[in-house]
Length: 321
Image (cartoon, rainbow, N blue to C red):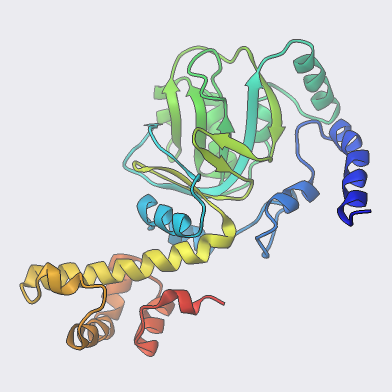
């Protein structure tokens, strides 16, 4: 018998019990299985919990830089573009808390709601995941691109989301009460449309499970990076690569642009894949002389700047264990 067969049979045996106890919230063990590449801390739902420091740092990473690193590591389906953004001037970052809806099927929807009520869920089904949010979560809701008659939030529920998370929402569907939501100081929302219609003809199918947002896949605990450039879901185990890749390139580009602006070097000279010995030496001298200013202006931690200075290296991939 295959070594995997007893495990599969065991999971099949307990799945109905798990579903009856928690009809929408995916068991912690399944979340851990889905995100097993992550070896760090997790929350009570099993979601990866990247450090707050990483969330602070990734807010200065561009979607393009993150996309490049994910593509280099084989993750080709993490980006979704073409959004209606409540405040396009701001970036939103947080840990994904996922929820998925499907078109309504009478009978099944009634049974799922009844099971949810028995498990303690109250209010409309779109409110259930909102009540589970913690600070720095971003609720990621798949409404299968529904652009009317299926609003995930209005101004009241948007206030609940912001109170619980301090961030906002990503909605593969539509929201309502745009001006009311906009009046909530601090919140931001990426949605496919705004429409005045209420929720109808859709049913909640899962909370804290795999979900799809257009062309992207999002797992619980993925790091959400949302800007005008799009929404990208960063697998937690790749966060260090995304951060270092962005921060080293950020410093290289700052140095390049400064030298070009001064007329000291041409773009051809500083955009060589391998710098000359002279340019290389001047780069590390520039880091030493402007260390504090560089940190403040370009939002690169001192430890990364010092690592580059002390090793005389920009090979950030060799720094990762």
